[in-house]
Image (tube, rainbow, N blue to C red; front, side, top):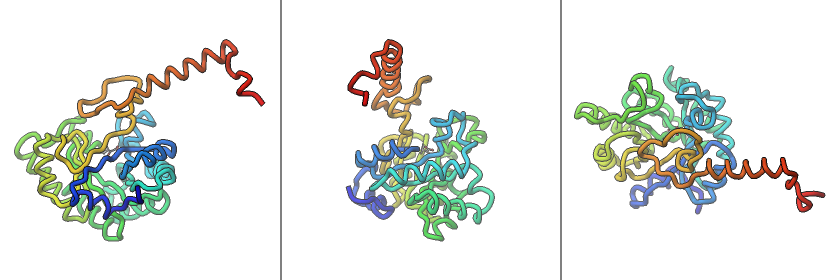
Length: 266
Ligand code: KIV
């Protein structure tokens, strides 16, 4: 695969090629995703929940996002790296939004940033794209709005709510975003939004009619030890079990002296 770019991702919608995106937070995982041909890798602020154990994404800082983005950027030779703007990095003022987006590109090596919210964050999106940093929008179930939503609830169920999300989608596109994540909404509404926009939509819990899909890597790999994944997650592997098995075998072999054997000695 050749180096993926923002125009390349936009062109996939025009050509009717579905976009398979995944999150990554580390160099090693980014290398694997990149070598498997994933065209778009998102350094999500979900890192706070799946890698740091927070119950929401709200505590994630700019410094943490820069650190993880830098690691993922080093691992992605071909994939476009999109870095999430964490809570409070773009809400205070458009100047702060631009400055923080700049850090993710300059220090993190990202090719684009992601901003949650539609109408209410359009000014930040416009300002960031105004200095030629591509922005991916994110509407619907926006995890940084967990307290307003009263939990991680599907959005856009009623007519008024659906209208509001259509307005959000239009606002994101009009502000200059190159794509938009549609999270946690009825499949029919995601289909309608996808048809109404010229930029690609990337769905998560938004049904099959988006221009692409994204999943949290840890969820689809089955890397968590406890709890059932949400309905929209398909488990493509059960890596927690694989890792537990390997670790238990190592422990046994250390305890009974089977490891290290002669082949592992100098
Ligand atoms: O933080 C994240 O991983 C995300 C995706 C779920 C879209 O925003």
